[in-house]
Image (cartoon, rainbow, N blue to C red; front, top):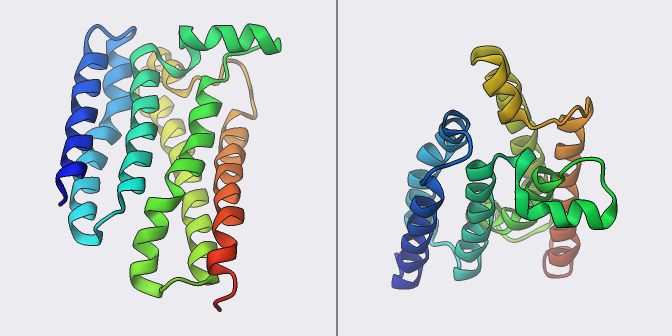
Length: 195
């Protein structure tokens, strides 16, 4: 693994530790970070196996920082996003929606690099990556729903962060898909001519 990758991962660990100090709702923070405890070692392993580009590692870093901020404050109550909410006149804090959009936008390239290693650089890789991003977004919404069922209802509501929006899960999945579609448009010229 290149030294630059190690430095980026170390930087994320420092940010994570800082944001782990005195989170707004400790139980929700722990629940939000279950995936971090599982996925961070997985990403390190995938990087060793597939040799992610520096760009992909930076994209992981940016997404992970946004997630850690959401876990610290909870996605529904991220105070630094209130200014955006007020400026646009939103009825709810859309920080969670932004992070779902970023999941499709920022995680597309790393997933694409894994898929290319198996099926090559072609249109099928783009379609398969888009499908993977959509599947991950949908699966995450199912995990959130299960958290409400399994854990205490108050904790589940904080974790879901629906803010009274009955279509929250569908809209979160949609914005992740939109983030992925932007990538499809960006990469299509490079990949689209190859079948």
